[in-house]
Length: 138
Image 1 (cartoon, helix red, strand yellow):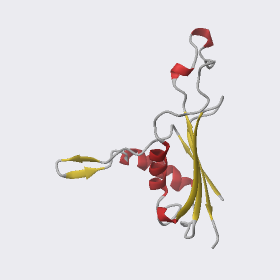
Image 2 (cartoon, one colour):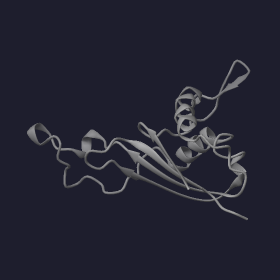
Image 3 (cartoon, rainbow, N blue to C red):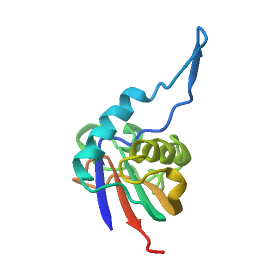
Image 4 (cartoon, rainbow, N blue to C red):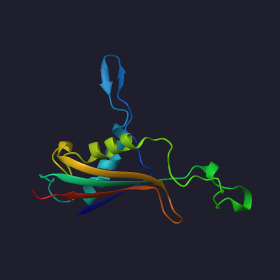
């Protein structure tokens, strides 16, 4: 089992754009930064068998969830427990799977199962994406 931690607030895949007869990926700049972190942490050759992936997207809480004034670091009692706002989890999965393609596995078609969850940061924790990869023997 391989663990990868990508620092920074989780990023979602943006839709491709069309301009002057060309198609471009507006997420390409973000992908370069994430790919650099993946390459730094995944030193092995790409997995060749079936792959299981577990994603945990740890997101920063919005300021509206906190009280104000001297109590600014305390959550309001109305702050939601679960993160059910944008970005959509499927777009986040697609972004990080694209970044790991050809580095952690040969092709994303090898992924036979995955689990994904998004949550807010806990105290003394920074936003990140935690990824567990496991190649399953045939």
